[in-house]
Amino acid sequence: MTRTVPRDTRLAVAVVGCGQIADGHVSEIAKIDCARVVAVCDREPLMAEQLAVRYGVPAHYADFDEMLARERPDVVHIATPPESHVALAERALDAGCHIYVEKPVALTYADTERLLAAVARAGKKIAVGHNSQFDPPMLELRDRVAAGELGEPVHVDSWFGYDLGGPFGKVILGSPDHWVHRLPGKLFQNNINHMLNKVTEFVTDDRPEIRAIGYTLRERTFGDVRDDLLDELRVLIRGERVSATATFTSRVRPVAQFMRVYGTRNIAHVDLVSRTVTLEQGPTLPAAIGRVAAGFAHSWQYARSAWANARRFARADYHYFAGLNTLIRRFYAHILDGAPAPIPPRDILRIAWMMDEIFAQIAPERS
Image (cartoon, rainbow, N blue to C red):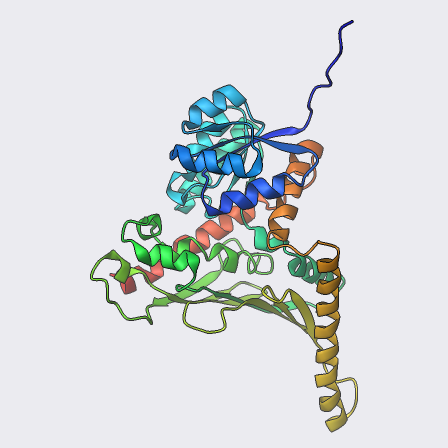
């Protein structure tokens, strides 16, 4: 009697680039029922083998084309340094794969446009690693804006703190050969996607007016390319209806990541570190009593957010990569069920254009 083995209909996913962020990809894909990681790849064979062993991935490769040919994945997650993204993405598309590309998707607007055109020609789907857009506080903000709690958005503040003394910063400053030093926008290019993607949701213009200033506050002591790395950035963005300010800082402590949305009715404050969302409302009581009551109202909102986080923690549902998990789930639903793209190609292009504009303006300050 012949036994029929059911065909595995889950998406076969491969990951190329086995550095730090690859652990997040593999661990979050493992939580998704409709997908399985079939292989990982890195030009350093030991990196690929170690990642495969850590997560029980059945195959690992040092050759990307060999992995594509042998595993025939449905989706490839590209988690390599940015300068290799476009070339790897094009080879994955040629092999018939959908692609998830870590940020930044490409080094320039022109390369981003070229890649999106290749995706369209191949009839495939693309997602970009703007995972912070899908963290629980950002989803709550989106719901509150849609419910009209803020009124009409007028202005956005997006703040991104970075610790050059932290584990990632130490690696970057530890070697003049680190790939970040070869990026046109250096440290900013690898990080300000997370700052700008919070702006583009509200400043919807294709070409808003941009003013950018970049500079360095730390002492320049290396005597090599590391001294060229700017560590402070201020950006003013003006659209037709909504304006924004975006700040990247490596100097301010504590290291904070937050955004504020100023509406015609209320102001929302989203703290991406404490994962709280609070609303500043106008006084509902007269004169001094109203100002005293406002402090209690803010305290109550923080307490309510903190308790919501505590409940999620108790349910083992409070994770660092919660946004990455949601983004990957929505991308796979986009592939399998035709759900809306989690990040529309137009937004990918607008952020690429903003980054080109910012780097062009701060280039003289770096020279």
